[in-house]
Length: 598
Image 1 (cartoon, one colour):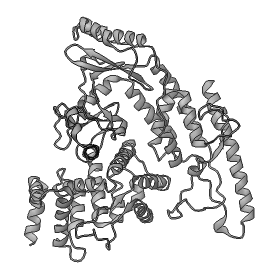
Image 2: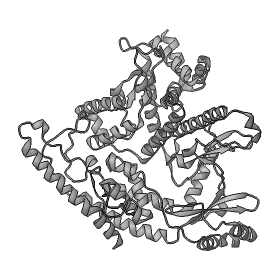
Image 3: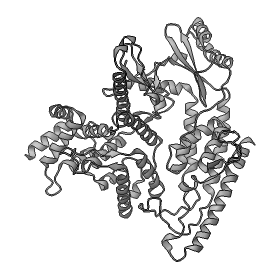
Image 4: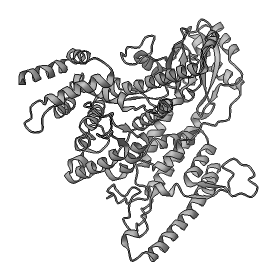
C-alpha cells in the first residue's frame, strides 16, 4: 500500500499529467508547422522526457517552507526521491539502473546515480545479538575462542561508522588482531528483498507489455547526426525483466557475506601489497578473518585512510616540517595526491586489461588514501560485495580497440571488434549495411569524445598524438547507440568507465594537462606487442598496424613509431621495450618474422 501510494501519487500522476501536456503541445506544433516537414516537432524522446520539470507538491526536495516560492522537480528527480523513500531494495535497484544505459536514458541514469543509502540505523544491542547468535556455533565447534567472542562484543562501538541498505559497519577489537571492521546484516532484510523481488518483476513485466507510441515524424536526434532506424514496438524497448532478474540475483549474492569474504580474499591474493601475485598492482586490501565470517556477519581488518573523493586534504603528522613554506607543502600535497590518483587509474586498467579480475564498483568512495608508517602514501580498496571476471577475449578486443583508434584512427576496424567485446550481437555485424551504419555512428561518437592535437600545434611531433578522452561524451554517445544497434553494455563496463572518469576528473583538478589515455595507450601497446594470450585477434590487429597498405610488407616507419610510442609515453628506454617484447613467445615470433622479411 505504501509503495503504491508513493509510486502512483508522487511519481506516476504528475508524470502522466506532464506527458499529456507534451502530447498536446506536439499536436499544436504539428498544426502550426505543416509547411516545413523538417521542422515538425521531434519524435517522443525518453531522454528529454525525464528532464521535464513540473511543480513539486510532495516536499521531496527538503520538506521546507519556501514562503510561497514554487519548487520544480524533473521527472528523473521525482523517481529518484521516490526510490529513496521506498527503502533498500529500491535504492540499490535505482543504483543498478544508473549503470545500464541499455535500459534507461542518460538523463534518468544521471539522476539515479545520485541515489544514497540513507537508511535508518538499527540499535547497537540488536547488532550485538546478531553477532552473538551467528558466532556462537563457531565457539561450539572450536574454530574461535569463547573469550575472544566476548572481547569482540564488549569492544563493539555503540554507533555504527556506516549504515547502508543491507547492513551496518562497526569498529571493534579482536584479540591478537587489533582493530577490526564488523559488518552486520540488517535484520529482516532478506524477507524484504524477496517480497520486493516479486513486485519488481511484476512491474517489469507490465512495463514491457505496454505498446509503443506513434511518432508523428522521424525527427532529429539531439545531435542531428546519428542514424536512427529503430522502430520500437513497445513503449519501453529494453529487456526490463531480464535486467531485473540479473539485478536481483546480484542482490541475493550480496546478502551472503561469505561471498564478500571470498571476494576480498581473491582480490587480496592478486593485488595485496602484502601477498598479491600481480606485477602491476600493489594496494592495501583488508585481511578478512574467515573463521569470524558467516552469512550475516563479516569481520575484517580495520583500515584507516581518507576517501579518494577528498584527496585535497593534506595530512601531515610530522610537526618538524613546519619550517617548510605553505606553498611547498601545498605543492607536495598536490604531487602526492596526483601520484595516488594515477595509481588508482593504473590499478583499474590493470584489472580491466591484464588480470580480468575486477572490482565491480571502484568509485572514489571505495578507494582510500592510506599513509603508511614510513610516511609514504598508498592506495586501499574497500567493499568487495561484487567482483567481475572479464573474459580474455574481451580484454584482447579492448586492447586492440584502443590501439587501432589511437594509432591509426581506424574506426571501421574498431567496429569489427564489437563482437569480440560482446557489446553487439554478431548478426548485426554480419549485415554489411548495419556494419557500415555502426562505423558511421562510431565515427561521430569518437569525433565528439576524442580531441586530437592539431598538427600545427608546436607540441606536435613524430610520436603518435594521444587524444584527450572526454568520458562523459563517450558514455553519453554510446548510450544513444544502445537501442539502434542492440548494444549490451555490461555493468562492469559502465561502472569502471565512470570510475575512470571520476578519477580523471580528480587528476585534472590537480593537473589540468592530465590525460588518462596516456596511461591506457601504453597498456594497449605493451599487450599488443607481447601478445601473452597468443590471441589471433591481437596478432591480426598488430599486423594491421605495422604492415603497409600497399604491398603488405612490414612498414619500418610504422614499426619504429610503435616502439617510439611505447617508449616515449611509458617513459621506458626503447631497449627495455624490445626486451619486454622478447620475453614472450609471440614477441620473439614477431621479431623473427620481421628479420626474415628484411
